[in-house]
Amino acid sequence: MAFSTIEQIYECIDTKESFVLDAGAGSGKTWSLIESLKYIIKTNGESFNRNNQKIVCITYTNVAKNEIIERLENNELVMVSTIHDFLWSCISQFKKELKVKLIELIDEKIAIVQSDLDKSKSKKGVTYDKNLEKKEKLESSKKELILTHNATQYKNYFSYKNNIISHDEVIELSSNIFSSYPMIRKIVADSYPIIFVDEYQDTFPKIIKILLDYLLPTNKILFGFYGDKMQKIYDTGIGEIPSTYNLKRITKSENYRCSVSVVNLLNKIRNDITQIPSGTNKDIKGSCTFYQKPNTDFNLESFISNELKSKLGLSDDLHSLKVLYLTHRLIAKENGYQELYELVNKAGKADALSKKDEDRCPFIKFLYLIENIVLLYQENKIQSLLDEIIFAINSFEDKRTLKSILDELVAIRETKKIEEIFKFVIDKKLLQVSQKMNDFDLEDDSNKTYYDELMKRPYKEIIQANKIADEQTPFSTKHGTKGAEFEHILVVIDDDAWRNYSFDKYFSGDTINESIYNRTKNLFYVVCSRAKINLVVLSLSSLTQASQQKIEQLFGEIK
Image 1 (cartoon, one colour):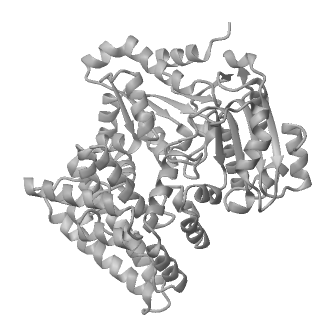
Image 2 (tube, one colour):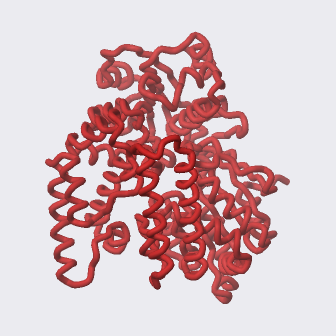
Image 3 (cartoon, rainbow, N blue to C red):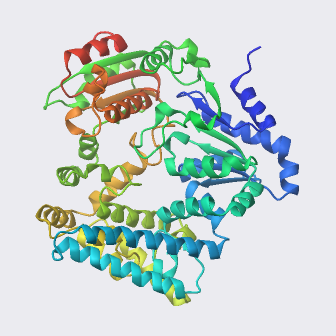
């Protein structure tokens, strides 16, 4: 008798066998995760409470974290946490070891800079001077760190001399501590007998290494990885857990979301999981249609009104239709920051507007950080806000001053230029300039032109770009589309607006650049799988004959 997916997971929990769950789109992956946690609470809750142990559930975003906490009714037995917060909770109590490893980390950075200095053909010039200055700063910070009695703090910025670390250092220090101190590994394993990871495919390889190279061998922790390698849409994610770890593989093949036509399309896109319509959707035929309109004068509103409204039975307000733009240029145009996009794209840094977790442009990352501060203030998340800023609160008067500064920041963002907001947050000591901003070579003419033009843009364009990166795009750092579903989906693709994706290469089977091929395939799978009833794909760029043949195999006749 074949066991259901959830029964296989329960068996792994009972036998303490670590596993990977690959759950196709619409299969109810989050339901499986929640039910797994509930099962552990029911079967092991009393024992864990007696032993002061917790179940850990690591999520990729705070949005997912809050959803899981809510669905578990705030059960204190489960620590639902982002990976950085979890790792920090593991290492923060070991103050002596933290300081030792931070000093070693600084020594490594000094050695790298010294190597660059030694390789320099000239002992003069901007690059040499910057490296020399960087080395001197690191050496000075190391001396001050050795003398300080402050405990290590984890904030949004780093200040080595003050024993303050940021996101990057948390991962690096965790790796170094776990690899060097077996006793700390044992303490962590004794405290957290079960660790689940949600959306494992988007987890950094270094984090998987920490979990599986250092903690799994303690033989005290049951690991469960929930996700889908086909839904990896971030370059930094591991994608697939290596088979060398010998974790049990479980596949969830049901699809409770998509119509029969959409499920059939998904099964043509991937060959590792054959999905089966399994809920009320199995009685919905639906449709999948492909249009090609390579016309610079193309009007999207007219297309929807004339071509799709009657075909899909849309109401006048179009509330059941979701348009997913797979071209950032169109997203920017629709949302009022096209000129900012064109500027950043021209400089080869367009990804900086959509990939908030990566350092594609240190200035864009800094500006997005300002928007995060505003959001925390508006949502009254004061402690999280204080963790993000460098403004010191030592008195009631300081609190009033900070409130006044933040009120002014909220107001002036709508009317001021980027350079004015930039200067404001620095002058008011809300944030400090990052090392990568300091290292940005403004002696280079193209860099200087880019920087000057960026500073002159209206700041409200940053507000819009940040809003899109957070909430509305399929490449959102909040997985804004990955878990969402809509009755009717219109996917708009345009190869002329992408550098890191190529739908023509994907459809034609061109795998010369394997990373572009896989990245495009995964993104296409994710957006197509959002459709509950009807899917429409619209290409605004030209396609080769080989691509058209493949599209016809997937969709039938191209319209």
